[in-house]
Amino acid sequence: MASSRTLIAIACVAIVAIAGASVIVLGGDGDNDEVEIRTVTITDSLGKNVDVQAPVMKICTVNTNAAEFFKILGVEDRVVSADSMTISSLDNIYGDVLDIGDYKSPSGEKIVQSGAKIVISQSSSRSLSEETEQALKDNYGITVLRLDCYGETMQQDVKQLLKILVSDSADKQYEGYSKTYNDVRDAVLNKAKDFPGDPSFLMLFTSMSSKQGTYYNENSQLGKIVESIHGHPALTDMGVSPGSGVTSKPAAEAVYDYDQKGSLGYVFIRGVSGNSASTDYETWVKTLSSFSIGDFNVVKNGNVYVIETDVLSGPRDYVGYVCIAEAFGIDTGLDYVSLVEDFNSKYGFDVKYGYIMTQFPTA
Image (cartoon, rainbow, N blue to C red):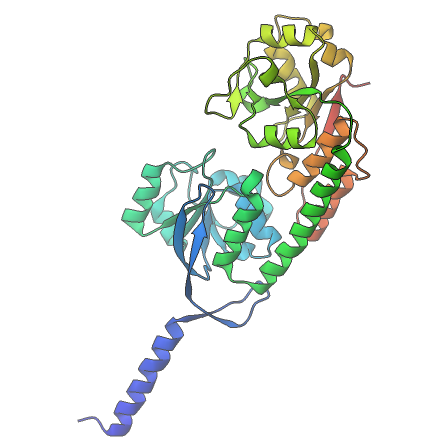
């Protein structure tokens, strides 16, 4: 029979073990204190509430924007697995994490193997299907958080990430990022609000426009951003119904006719990562190949701009605000090249672009 001292000792060990299970020691991101595990409620980009045990120390992401934000927040070491595209596009940061395959059909076995039970996905484009999400939950106990980390909900989405991180240093990093973002965006919008005129614009979704022109419509995040700065969507004037989607495909004849009336003010072309500006300009030209591009008034006026995709969505989209405003002729007092350089320097990125914005036709 065990002595009373032995029983007391065993009881003490049990209490310590139980207590130890309710806390986690943070490290590697500037936080070294013990943090109590707690349930936090995350509101995703679709407005759905999801309960998560925090802090989350091992994360899988199939969202490249979120992956960049983890780097900005200084917690990139918590990302233990990611989809192939995220790894290849950010190989200098995530080249050593476990590749779980395509973002549409990630391997649940590999996600679990990496130690992650949380997957960060987008809610619409580049998102997991509901069937895949349910299968990951049922078969592997994996929770999917749909946080876009771009567009209208971007800053709110990052705040949800902060909830699962429980990191003072990440909170501080976000405060700095948010200040820069809001200062630049607000400076652009303040300069633009009294700028005269209301030109129409088209924004080409280049990667979907190899044959027929596919343009962002009034439902899209990019369309809303451009309109918030200056002008209005040309598709609205052209009578093109946006439907429920975020892109529309007007006939080349409709674009030509609208331009010939002198109504088309600007064309913005979203570049494809890795392409030159001239390559993406030629993509737009090919969508109008039944007409001579030199006959377009918008071309004669030099109001076609190709903008690097990375500054139009995600963590750098405040740089895109400056690009768009400057294309409209609004003097923001800001330099988009310097903003990209400052971003790289501050957050440890080594992103080099062949161009950020190029005006066509070139001199």
